[in-house]
Length: 217
Length: 296
Image (cartoon, rainbow over all chains, first blue to last red; front, side, top):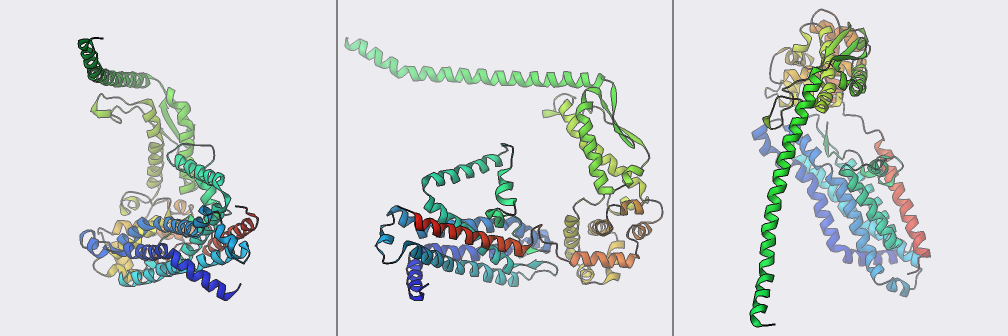
């Protein structure tokens, strides 16, 4: 890959994705800070600092995979949808192959995700430090940031693929989401779609499953 | 058509929706009456069912050493529920469940068990069946409790540890960290004498600590530890019998279990991470392949 071409693509993508990028960094940094925020005040009323911290951590656990999924979708959509709407005319006019442009932009998108993952990790470290955690309660900002990065990558790659697949596949994906939601309301289809999509170890969405605990014992 | 007729027609058109409003109000009132009537009927039917159930002969369900007498009409549904409750008890308390003396539990209709809106003393058959699983589970737990030393169950606050040892571990940690005297933290740091003192002393946190200690003995020794703890003597003697080591060692192991972070999920973290990155690479490759062949 040509370094100069990549740098130019990266700079162009960074300018284009700047609002999404800023939002991602702020949101990623906020989650661990919100987890430990206000605990001192609550301890004054309820006591049990460790219990409150663990409870807060459990409360915020589902936010991480949801935000990772959203980031991936946002980044991919911002990266590719303009080309879809303009029917890839800009890409056709470039003096390089389409697959090379796609690779450059895919890689640029991945690099641009890094600040959000780093923000999560740094904010997690800061949050754990300022919260003066009781002994035994451990913070896992590194593991959480790595998992967050992997989940964002999967979401980004999957959405990028879906963008190319056209409307029929989008509707199929949408129908699948609707079915999962319907099943969430207690309608049974014989098999649990949520189990297949998220809990099967070979599922691409398995990285989103499980407990995303920032603080644990 | 004269102007007068036109005016009457226009007025009729305006008045029609107003008349429809009256019709709607009337219909709504009728629907409300019908619903109230249906509720009264449902209660009467439930009361009738309940009376019929109460007059029925009791039938024995289950196999020794644990059987349950239930109203005959509930027997077919009760069988699987009782079997499930006994199987759960076996997975929790091990072979001690089968060593207990034979006992027959009678679950009768309880007129006070379900009073919707405070009306009428009756219990629906479906409610009796849903209550059965809980009643059987409670009875089995009480039977296990009776096999332990007399002071054991009161010592742990009247309930045996939950099946999920991790929950008891977290409760134990929370109790130690909530201790405002600082002894809880010292115990967590490995001061066994302080731990023993906290366990012996009656306080607001002692119950959670004791349940957590018993849960750690069962977690380490397996469900057959219940059988070993059965018999007479003091609580300490029972715990020593169950764990096969001294009380100091039991306490040290308990503190160690509190301090050891929980095991990762069924799928190791690195594998989960690798799978995520791997899938991202596969999906990105598919994307690039698709770009190559994509014709806009």
